[in-house]
Length: 152
Figure 1 (tube, rainbow, N blue to C red):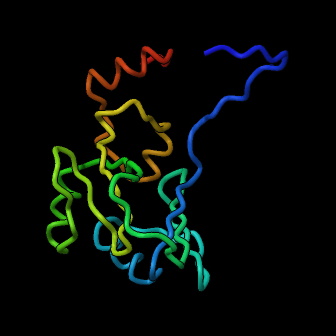
Figure 2: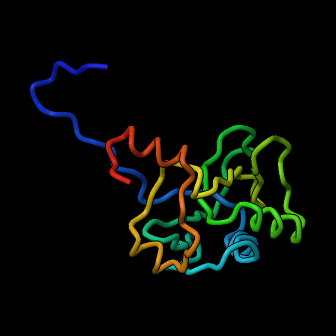
């Protein structure tokens, strides 16, 4: 893809946050709190912000659409098996398929991806502050990073 513009194109650097519409903020916070340790950034009657390392998840009260079937976001975790175990323990709706997708109480689809298997990377200081100790990457993830010009 080329651009004929005389000015350089800006670069998308990543995501600052994901925003989800939910039916009930307390119910959603309780649900996620049974799966992950939560650090609430701030809260109002209609919004809640959950820190996730150097990013955050914004919950907005007032779901205005039907539950999603394919639309989702990928949540990076340090231990996919532990997430599956927590989801099973709380009776969450885990969707069929080869990955690990589940629905939150409002029908938002979340796909779990393990940090070690993907090109997504965080600075060691962020990982340390999050208490992540098993941050090793698989060779295929390292190769993806090398193809992007990242020295690993």
